Image (cartoon, rainbow, N blue to C red; front, side, top):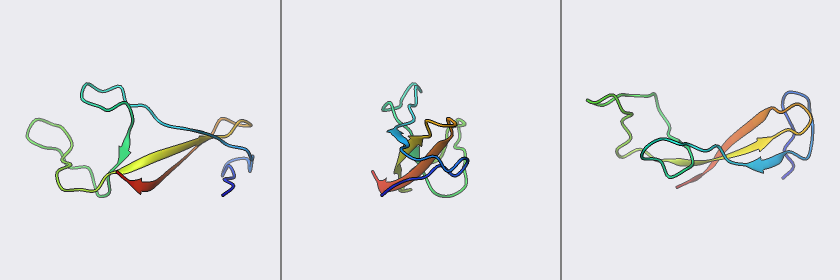
Length: 73
């Protein structure tokens, strides 16, 4: 699959990932469907909701990031 930049139509996007440096993170971010709901202590409610891996691609021409969430983790 060839991914094209939606900003400048550049090609040969560089694959990568978006890192999360939070206290309890695994070092990467995930996408969770539905609106953000906060729990009692202010954190996001995630219990029972699916989580998807975020794949990121950077355009070498303009620096724009394209994000996709194709795989449930």
